[in-house]
Image 1 (cartoon, rainbow, N blue to C red):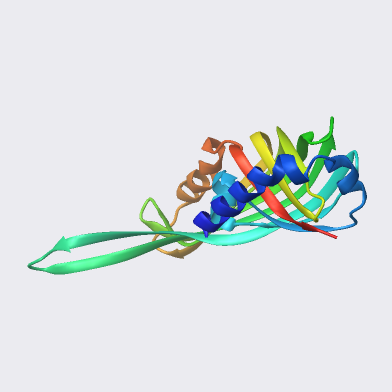
Image 2 (image 1 turned 135 degrees about the vertical axis):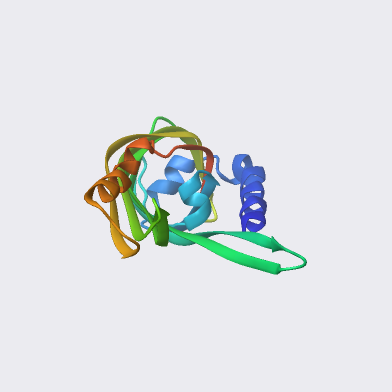
Length: 209
């Protein structure tokens, strides 16, 4: 999937200057756009969110949603006793309300509100097994370019995207083990160490109507 995204993005970039000369006019003629987002951003890489946008000459607004699993495996044991493989799975969900303010034909300021969720069915803290839900709400902002082509396609590249955390919370539900009030409080306070998510070279591409 990542290789396909990179190939499509490269194709769009090559044709940007040929077919996207009047991006502002092409945006103005469209009513709706459907696309996909990825790039050097943890939430986008894992959740591969889809994009629904309402484009305009000066402003574009949209919705972003996607969910995916980050899976890692560890193996322990030896050849004499046998190996045991343990799978560790985290589910990442991205939900965003987005906007873009265009300062020219393609250059724009992306902004929005993001709601990120990270879920794990089995999370161990101080020998207690929990079901974990981590939720963060943050403001996103950045700088980018976006080309809308004469044939309906579009490509946006956010060169940089930063974030400011508004709120976050960890909810833990005990599944097994002996829990104390101190253990649960400490587990729920782990969220204070997590900073707002940011990234670079974030690609949004799709087709408009």
